[in-house]
Length: 259
Image 1 (tube, rainbow, N blue to C red):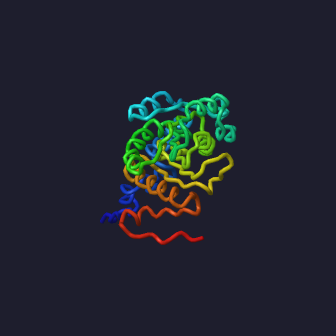
Image 2 (cartoon, one colour):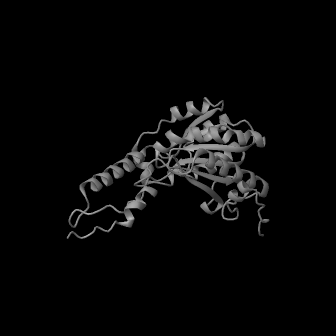
Image 3 (tube, helix red, strand yellow):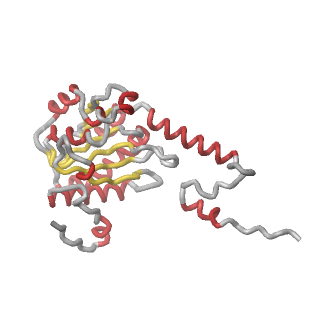
């Protein structure tokens, strides 16, 4: 009589997550198919970090939405330096600073920065569609919008200097997030009130995992618009601004801010 096989409960769970669970075994090792899948995911993550950024293509997609775009560089002269020197990615080059001063059209309520970050693939795929999805909320609110800035070799904090030079009350920086083994194309969005050099990460809010398998453009745009409205109303971002956008979506009133 054969022994009945007990189904592995983990196998059914695999369809609910891209996480590497229930990989199986081949003797004391992983199956060859899983080893190859891991190697592919690792290669895709490395490619996302080292791929060339098509700043001109992103700028053209933004301009097709009827918005002016300005391309700038950080102080990191190349990708290798950018990866070794994060501090240089947080500051504009002299030429980039001059280009922003020339493109400024007076103070604005909102500046949008699109930065390559650690995944150009994420920016190429998601930046322009997200901006397009966000635009109706920006226009409905009547916010004055500065030129969209496309930044090469850029870290999150570069948005502080960009926003300050444009005289923006608020900056939203879209950036390619550090690739994971199941998400090489994840886009993040950072919101900072009264941007200026020296702001810390505790003074920003973040909406992350914007991609096909994560947060949709519509959901991300809703959260960004909510954060922008609340930031401009309360005069703050960061740990003092809690994400209660879900309660707003449900029509539940939020408690008043503490302090």
